[in-house]
Amino acid sequence: MSPNDSGYIKKDLPDNIFKAGSLLLVVGLVLGISGFLVDSYRASFAYLVSFIFFLSIVVGSLFLVALEYAANADWSTPFRRVSEFLAAGLPLLLIFAIPLMFNTGSLFQWSHADYIHSDKMLEAKSAYLNTPFFMIRVFAIIIIWILFYTFIIRNSRKQDESGNQLLTKRNIILSVIFIPVFAITVTLVAVDWIMSLESKWFSTIFGVYLFAGVALSALAALTLVSIKLKEKGFLHPAIKEDHYYSLGTLMFAFTAFWGYIAFSQYMLIWYGNLPEETFWFMQRWEGGWKIISILLIVTHFIVPFFYLLSYESKTNPKKLKFISIWILCVHFLDLYWLIMPSMSKNDHAYSLNWIDFVFPLVFIGVILMVFQKVSEKINLVPVGDPKLKRGLDFHL
Image (cartoon, rainbow, N blue to C red; front, side):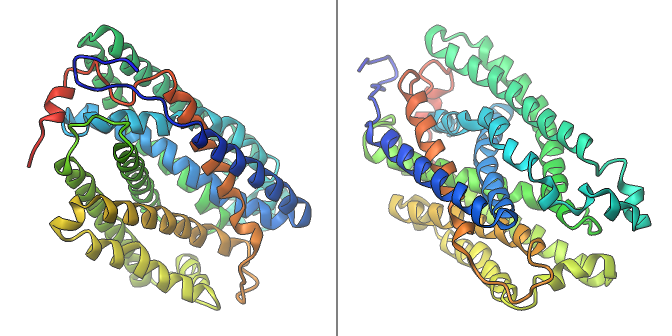
């Protein structure tokens, strides 16, 4: 432990975090590999759901870091390192994308040349929807994210030692550049990985829809981890309820934003009443999917919206932990609802399967392991940031 001028004392996180992550990873890998052996087609879709869930947290966390710098926010500075640690799993996307590359034939109909040539609409899209270009886009996007992550995080960590304010200015510039790049790349992820599962369907608002879920899940992860760390004495002792209020308010805002975008997408497609658009929603309003569609409206919007409406719920750590876990779970349900019907589109009497829920164990385990390892050498609070004092003094 080493004291510093800010009043923060670094404490090592317990090894149990890494052990728990390792256990989840091993169990998840064993069950996941078994799932591929039992039913590789279904396992491909289930893996995609969990992959996008993991991507949401790590890339969304980098977005929150960039957002703080771009907005020159003070209140969030004591929490920023938590988002940085959550984003530390981002380079692993290069590895986790590989299993999906080997299963494009199961996931995407447009990857089959005979299917493309049987439809004039798909032939017109083939310049974009083809396997080589798809793989180039996937790895190019991940590499771009990794580059921004590397430079922004490196400057942040250097500042702990030097206190050089120029590093903040450099990160502001990088963040201002990253945010529009993030918007474009997340839209491409939404189109490539999810929308193209139904190669004839399209929605001009779908990229914004995924962005809302990504930002909300990253906020929920930040809130949950920050409160747990503060309760155990690993964050700065000056963090108080006013800081939690801002986290709760942001989760409330993005919950409302997600609801607005989700309704807007549905309303415009319903109003246009075009067969090439409406079939996507009809597919999710038949058989067992109707129950999940209604459940999603209630759990993803109504419950968190009214739960976070009051001042008390935004400042109560126990309530914020609960709603953070809730939001992470319903984001997974949202991704499940977006992706899995494409697997069962010819079978409306859909039923759950154990394969659908084993891969989250892998990614949650990885997040815990990476977080533990990064925290061993890096402060959990950015002690060299000139905004830290103002952030700790923040009050409503």
